[in-house]
Image (cartoon, rainbow, N blue to C red; front, side, top):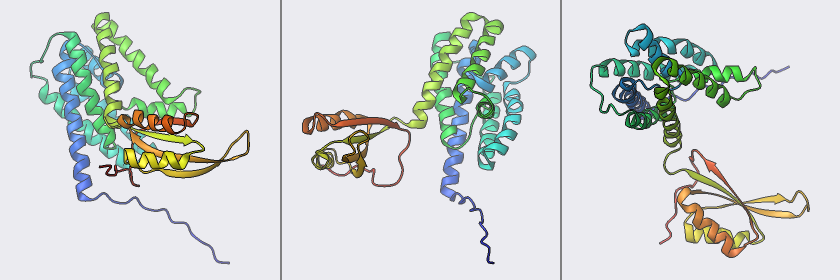
Length: 294
């Protein structure tokens, strides 16, 4: 009896250009985080969440360079990340953490740009968030608490987001006892801004929208979208759950700025059409590129 063996497919190797691009953005992101920490947050006794926050508190309480704590405290998480997520993630994270650690060490003697805690929290949060977002987009991480949260969530009723929020609530609360409660509140501002900037950096300014339209005039709506928006559409066949009637569905992807125009097109042709809009973090392949409508 002949047996068939299944062989695991190897990951395709990165081209030299893609590898250099990944290294560039990992380096740039880690440097930006170093700038945000040493030029804005740390001199004003403002912390960030996760391992970075723990490292800032540890450096203040026990002495020693911040970069050393950033590296040492991330190492256990790197080991876990290697086991759970993979070699590429672990190496990318290790590289970014080393750059961040060196960056904070080199920038420590540099005078802060502002001693106003509010300005420091705002601009420090923006710079740190952009830097972390770049590292995440490049396949790495600068905060090991998310790896722990993934593992804990598998054996608990809490989601990854809830666990990370609990960790950071504890860390930011600890800043109140160490640096004072006013600094803890500034830290919360910095953390919130950084969190939003991470999302914006990962998703990009041109966030896309997925559009689902169910109508009896799908061809008219589809033609209008192609002609007036320059976007391609896909026609799908469906069945009504209540009526059992055959339904035609339009699926298309537009930018955030084109959403209002598309809605007006649908409203104009079929005011009773069902329209659902969802956020898309990334779009690749296909024919998403906008067609000429001149």
